Length: 159
Image 1: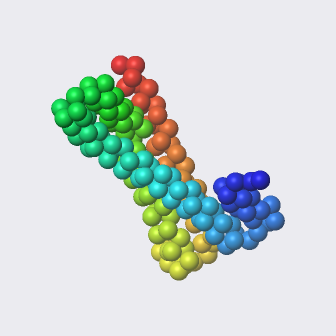
Image 2 (image 1 turned 135 degrees about the horizontal axis):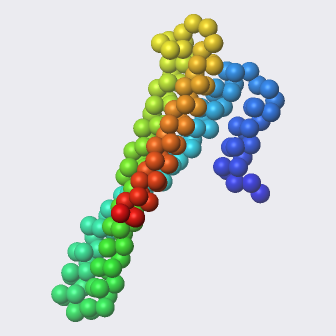
Image 3 (image 1 turned 90 degrees about the horizontal axis):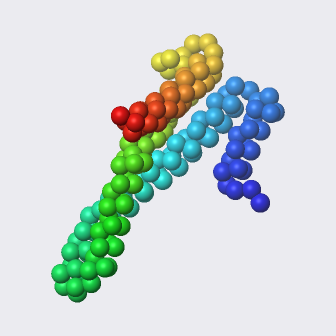
């Protein structure tokens, strides 16, 4: 049985296979992109808040357990867990990714609204072509920024 994501992609892809008109392709591409960026934003938001809460609560619990109950091993384990949580936040840039994906979703919604209203850059002839060109260029730019960050991580590690 196919996952929800696979079914979404199949629906998205069918619009291309059938030789759909440009307006349908604009709608399909926008819906698929918005779902993807929104899903990623929500994932990283939830991860960011989960690990942030662990970073706040773990030291408090560790201190309480160590001083009140004198369970040093448990206190140490909780401290290690809190440190690992902080490291994961930094390592995976959860807040930055959440912000990037959320900003992308909002930008796409904004541009799609302008496209539907046929105003600004999307007034006149061939608004679908301009919209699709903008959308693909914007998403490629986000991807390139992500690649650059990955390259910079490796350079920072090797220095």
